[in-house]
Length: 371
Image (cartoon, rainbow, N blue to C red):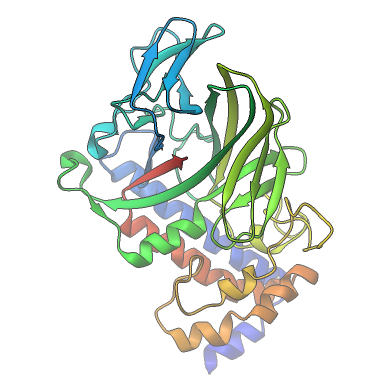
């Protein structure tokens, strides 16, 4: 009771400072691990392994220096190969037994693509490239980046490809990690991973806003990509589809995925940066049935964020305390009228989730299946 009276006596500015101190505390704890951990110098507790995997009907593929030909398949998936590099496989690729893919070249651009014997390839994971991270310190709350893969058409005319992205967390000691002793993270950590490391298909750098959320909690949306009027869409059942009406044979169509680990809960809640500084905004618009839904808050997201079952966003030890503190009504209030006093009590559970991830996840695999 005495604690409650003390909190009620704080001013709005004191609560803002309290929230800033909490964020600083979490970031400092991650930096301590950076200094004392065994992982390579540019990476923090989570090392990302990004791999592209797909299942197509072809059983024979031939490669020439100018194009890829596939028997029985309408497309291939590929990652760009670095110039003068033997492989774009990462330093941790063997831990998850990810094949390297087959070299090919289309219009003077080098790729690592599928063939009849390989089912996946990897992007480079090095001490200066973790999912093409935009920050120097590696993967941590507040980090972001983007990755590009390619859909190579083997036909003329309409082409449609169904995509499925899976983010999986693993545990294991860095110095002795192998494919045999890596274990999947526990169910709670896996759930939180899916709600804290987010995937999108678009980003507006001027507005610091993301577009086209790829998540179980996302709503339907449709986005026209820059390349040849290709369309990437997500339906109300969560099906993710890339399509183009007039595909050109032996053409590589790029698809860029943007990822972000929101540093604070506010990135989910607010419509502009007036309350959270220069941090990214995930959903700057409210749901409107007449819109494309690319930048809109999903209709049921706040309800999902308050759920006591399969919660992807908050971590708590006492469920009754959490249920009484974090409610759909309070999250909606933050969106319409940001209250720093109320926000301070909500954000604690989001920061605790980051801490739980830091203690229970060591490696992450991002897998893309396509058919």
